[in-house]
Length: 298
Length: 253
Image 1 (cartoon, rainbow over the protein chains, first blue to last red):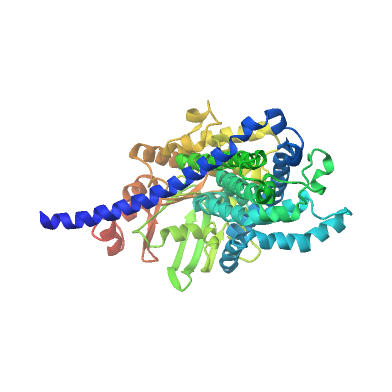
Image 2: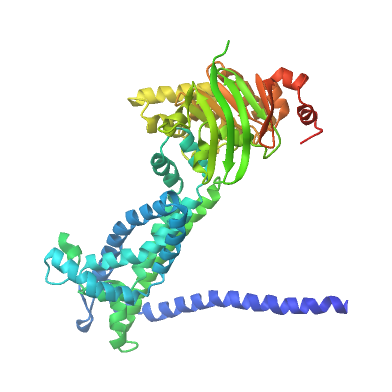
């Protein structure tokens, strides 16, 4: 009996440690969430909703209209995805289906490295190299536009989109490819009509995750979008400066008095951002779950 | 008399340095069922995949010898592999319908090959193919349903329907019943007997009873060699080789 106990005690200690470690991560997330709520929710009482969702963000004059920021984020993110989606999916198809083995072995780690480039470096790159090109090409007074931000964000979300989409293509069973080829379809027909549709849910997930990364990105966006809080409602908005939610928080948080309305408003933006990314991630998770449950994939 | 569909002359097949088939020569007759039997890894599936060049997709695979389909060497330079595979259809070991609707599965081949001119023709072709695979009555009420919601036996018949939709001349079957229950297996075998009226059928099977039940000709493979090839009845009643007799009576393999 005595000998039985000792290993059990050790087991108990280890198990408890593992449990504490695991639960603490949940705890931290919950704490962050509560902190965000505590600091951000007051703004919804201090500022009336008509002001909060109006079109002018001018905190010095008590104007806390978040709409230009929300739309700015939406414009930059959606444009980024519109660029990154076709590019990412085609690259994933190339890496998984077309590239010879040796090229795949080189490309895959390089794509992962892309994901590791710090965003401030990309921002710097965008500011000094991309912005002048955009300015000259568009003949605009400034190269710091929504488009510049979208290009940088597209570049940033590409590694995520490529590697997740590549995994999705990889999970398509060889039997589908064999079936397509055996029916007399060419390699391209097999890829576009069989493999890509079969990987559709995984590709949707890839885009969702890429979008989640893009919408939450701050540094690079702040550096290249020009940060003018204007409503991006005209057709040429893409080629004009814009300000995103994240950039607003980062730029203004340093100079607000703690506990002021402005301070609460910035946290309020944080809550809105949190809700948006939460919904995106939830949608992505739901598609993954649906795919797993449908499971049939061998 | 049946015409010769495939004629194989001294086939050697390599995966890299490994020789999977050595010196195989045989003829396969049209509108007959030719069964290939033998233990796992004896090369019978490799042999089957030489007939529609599906082995081309494997890196390092190489074939020597001549494979003649209607007297044309299918490994000659300039042969259109895509067209070859349309002529020589294939049904795989596990049913592998695409994760699409029943209709779209059967319509896949005709669509990519542009076999039909309009919707009515396509619908007619899908119906004919499903009838040909003895599946029409079971799915006609809901052609839009997901192919993966069918039973495995139905899925395999769907794969056969998909294969015959492009009007092949030959149908290769790689252990088509190994994932199926006995009832579904009998349904597929019955279907094969009907199909041989129109097609040349080559089937790889682990199941010697199946070979004896459905085939007209049987080839016995052992370690990459074709040990015996003759009419099924002779192979099973008076095999010429001791090894064949040992295998079919269960003493070897």
